[in-house]
Amino acid sequence: MIRSRITGTGSYAPEKVLTNLDLEKMVETSDEWIRERTGIRERRIAGQEQTTSDMAYEASRRALDASGIKAKDIDLIIVATVTPDMPTPSAACILQHKLGAKRAAAFDINAACSGFIYGLSVADSFIRGGSYKKVLVVGSETLSKITDWEDRTTCVLFGDGAGAVILEPTEGNNAILSTHLHTDGSMWELIHMPAGGSRNPASEKTIKKRLHYIKMKGNEIFKVAVRTLEDIVIETIKANGLKPSDITLLIPHQANLRIIQATAKRLDLPMDRVVVNLDRYGNTSAASIPIALDEAVRQKRIRKGDIILLEAFGGGLTWASALIRWPL
Ligand code: ACO
Image (tube, rainbow, N blue to C red; front, top):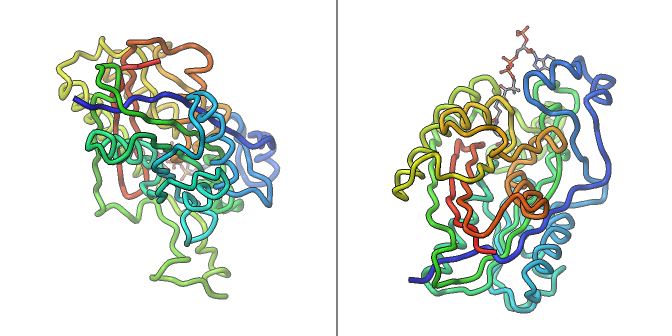
């Protein structure tokens, strides 16, 4: 049976650091409020000229180096993002050109914060089906460019960055074991960017009304996120005939420390078996899981045979999980 395994990881975060103390000077907020309600201390902010595909390139180069494969050998590139360089072409096409990955088909996936796991699931299906053998999956976001820096309810949350993995086929059991994707479009309005699409094309009016920024009803999402993530982690473990205690490491989407702690509690996992880096990066949407995964790999927190559970929740609303038996 053919499955897919991760053969390399990479990540990138822009140099500029924006701390909670910096934000205190920009909006009516406090370091204490942000830390207590979210767990975030600082986040990275892309340069004015820096794009999602630029950051995706840096993360992808590192993943390629780690896996030992060449860009020209990639068959498929999937970029998960809600902040492509422009509405069209996709960030994946621009990344394909920057990498010189001439053989690769390339497309973007928009599933907000769940985007990386959605991308991983699509890549896994292509590999299991035999269509592709070397797939690059990237999560890259420049959320700072669609953040309203006058809205304290959102601007304290988001950050920029990118993470990438290379997937290749294996006949062994150390591979992606399963992926689980869910959507409830009835709650789409809870996180959305109102303008710039066919409903509200860009105009002087949409700019004046600040409609090109993310709007989020955070406290309504919070409750749905806790409930659905608790459900999906149990669904994933059961689908594989495992028990919560079989999980070596949980790598959650990094939106809010309280959401992460609730999921860990449902699994009865101590926090030292949970990867948390949102204190340093904030919520980087589709980039958060591949950045956390890459850091865990480089810190040697993951060993061959470990069972790794990825889970995410985001705009759409979407939520997703993946269970991996670690191959390296
Ligand atoms: N500084 C100070 N006070 C603030 C701030 C701020 N930055 N932001 C809001 N407040 C105030 C509110 O106005 C409110 O005041 P009031 O009680 O006088 O009305 C009070 O703090 C409490 O606000 P809540 O929104 O109820 O705070 P909550 O504890 O829910 O925390 C948060 C807000 C951090 C957004 C939380 O709800 C959350 O993390 N939600 C989930 C977000 C998420 O997972 N999103 C999905 C992924 S994002 C994506 O897909 C791109």
